[in-house]
Each structure stands twice: as structure tokens, then as C-alpha cells.
Image 1: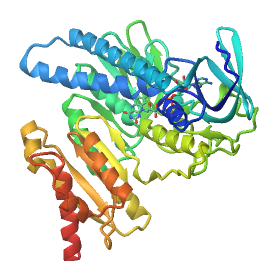
Image 2 (image 1 turned 180 degrees about the vertical axis):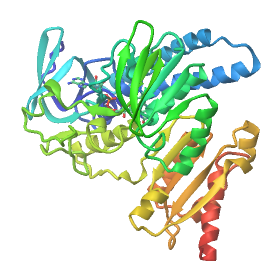
Image 3 (image 1 turned 30 degrees about the vertical axis):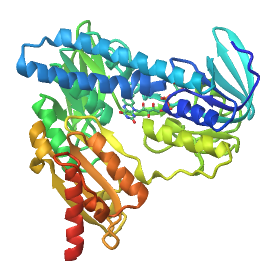
Image 4 (image 1 turned 45 degrees about the vertical axis):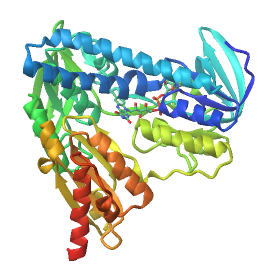
Length: 461
Ligand code: FAD
């Protein structure tokens, strides 16, 4: 325990929200401390974005290897896990290095608020009190546990699923959201027989059906069985297998596998002994904190960012809010603008969306014009043998201002940033269409989709 007694900014939690907030606070000249009860870097670095993307990338490399040689899945998976852990450790170490070099005090332990200006930090039976002028809460989230499927034994959450030491022979995933699809497909590529059970009428329920189409086809090609419109009921575990009972069309059915992975969403870490009730901070019925456009809660010197606030639970949203909150504390006029938060699914092929979709625009009665272009006619995509998918742009029919875009296809995760920038800057489809894109690149598909919109506007279609 240190002897720090007062800081201008106390940040609780060191995920992509917390550590970015602490860095920005320190860069802006405020004395700053960050409290973390686990390893630095939060869910994203340790058991979320980074390890999942490392294993997904390794599963693609294994798939390629298998094409040209008799690569061994067990050996490749063991190597993949070692590779993943190396990256996780490097990133977590990087977070610590950044914080230390920025002059942020790192306090190890669990924080609880005792009043609006004081927190107690406890670790291994020792306690330290610290007072603060402002606090940024960034305590993140944890997997929702369903009563009928308590994690343990053969029931895994995403955390355990990222750390299996051997490729399972079979896996049933409850929940076809992005985490379920990403992890299910990763294991399928290593040879696991995967079943995804989803309550909605398609996997990735938040995305338009035409975008999910190419992903669904590849999931099938990878041998994944998707059961939609189904409700998981309970599990029965035995020594060497687990049977999941589910309901579909009022019929009781079951599927048996080596493991069941539950990915049905995440729950904000606003409960427990954090002390939000104690200091009178109101929460929504689902435990989220409500904030204003500067990420300030109902208590003016306490800010909340990331997964504990409403909106998409994503690392880049947390990091974005982190900067706004720290800047607000420094007296700057920064405010959140959520029009351009990209959503990415690291499936094969990748899927990305930013801003307004055609479906949302139509539901809200917003006039729109759309344009599309396919990867199938793009030279670079052909060279990469990655021709599945398309780019779709949604624009205002009068001004041509880009309101949203969706991409399914190779490198959608990278390509979507150009479209996020377009929305952020109020760019028009003409701006995108007349920007010279290098040839042959995947970005040309964005240029062509924008041209497609611009031509429709000229024709008055
Ligand atoms: P967290 O990262 O959850 O960090 C909160 C930290 O606070 C934790 O380290 C916790 O130990 C600490 N803490 C909590 N309470 C206390 C306390 N009282 N005292 C001290 N410390 C405390 N997002 C993406 O954008 N892209 C992806 O590709 C992606 N992939 C994901 C894959 C998986 C498998 C999972 C589970 C998540 C993924 N996410 C992804 C979501 C992303 O990880 C979260 O949105 C992000 O980590 C949220 O950041 P945060 O700072 O709000 O909280």
C-alpha cells in the first residue's frame, strides 16, 4: 500500500476506459491515480478483445497451413494459446509502462467509495484511504450468468473459453451475438464441432439480414450448425459430456457436447461493495449509470465511462468516453457525439457497421439514398481470394452527407474507419467518391459504393 492521500483525479478500473482516462487526466496536468484489483488492462486486454483476436488470427493461420500441409490441430492450438498469452502479457505490460511514464500512480487493490470525495482501497487485508477532487468510474462488466447454466465444469463463459488448453471435440454456444459467433467460428476452424443456439431468427441479431448472409454461409462452410428461434432450458453434466436441453417450436430437444459456452451478454460492475448506493448514485434497472454529454453522473464530481454506462459495450467507446471525461474534469468543453461508433464482428468474413443503417433510417422515417459495391469485382479482393461481401453506404438524398455504412467482407474492421471519419466530418458521398484511392486496394470498394450513391442522386433515383 502506498502513502498517497489526495489526487485530483481518481480512476477506478484500468480497462480501455480507465487507463485512457488516467493518461489523459495526467497529460492535462492533474495529479492522477488509477486503482485496479486484477491485472492492468481490464477485460479487453486480458480476457476480451486482445486474446480473442489473437486466437481468431491463429485459427485463420491454421486454416491456411492445413490447406498446404497436414498441420496438427492440437499442436497448432497449443502454439496459438502460447502466442495469445504472449500478446496479452505484452499489452498489459504496455498499459503499465504508459501509465508509469505519464506519472499516474498505480494502486493495486479493490476500491470502494465511502463518500463523494473518498475511496478506500483494500488489498490482502490492508486498507488505504484516498481522497479525490474528481473520480472516473470505469469498473467495466462481467459475463451474465444464467441461473440454469452456472459457469463451472463443462459450462464456460468467454473467459474460460479463451483459455482452454486443448481443442474441444464439440462445443455448444448459447447466444449467437458477436462473442458467440467469433469464438464458435474460431474453434470450428481448429476442428471443433460447433453448434450455435440463438433465440432470434438469425445469428448476429442486431445486424441486417443481407449483411449476416455471407457470414452465415461461411459459418455453415466451417461446419457450424446454427439453431435459431431456440431457447436454452438447462444442462445435464456427466463425467465426459454435457447435454443442453432447449425448446424450439414448443418441442423439447437436446444436443450433447464436450463443453457449453454461455455468451448471452454482459452485466455492469456497479454492484458489490463499490458503494454506489452508499453515495446515493442512481442506476438504471439493469445496473447502468446514467451520464450527461460530458460523462458526468448525477454527482457532479463523479464521472462514469465504458461498459458501466449504456450504449454498446465496446473498448473504443470506453476509450472515447475516457478522453471526454478527463477533458471535462480539466475544464474543457468536450462532449460526446455517438453518431459514429463502429461496431465490428471479427467473424470470417468480417462485418462492420457505423452510423445509421438502412433499416434504422426507414424505421425512423429518415429520407435516405443507398449505394453498394461488391468485393467480387475488386482487383485486390480477387488477388486475396476474398471476394465475398459488399460495402453499403446510407446517405442523405438532398445533401449526400454520409449517415451510415455497413461492410461485410475482408478487412471490414479496418475499412470501416474511413466511413467513421466521413460521418464524423460530415463528408458527402461525393467527397468519398472523388478521394483518390490507391489501386488495387480494398478501399476502392468504398469509393465505388459512394459513386453509386452519387450517381443515383444525379439521376434523381
Ligand atoms: P473493463 O475492460 O471491463 O475494465 C474494468 C476494470 O475495472 C477491470 O480490470 C476490473 O478488474 C476493474 N475493477 C472493477 N471494479 C473494481 C474495483 N472496485 N476496484 C478496482 N478495480 C476494479 N470490444 C471491442 O471494442 N472490440 C472487440 O473486439 C471486443 N472483443 C471482446 C471479446 C470478448 C471475449 C469480450 C468479453 C469482450 C470484448 N469486447 C470487445 C468488449 C470490451 O472488452 C469491453 O467493452 C471493454 O473492456 C470495456 O472497457 P471498460 O474500461 O469499460 O471496462
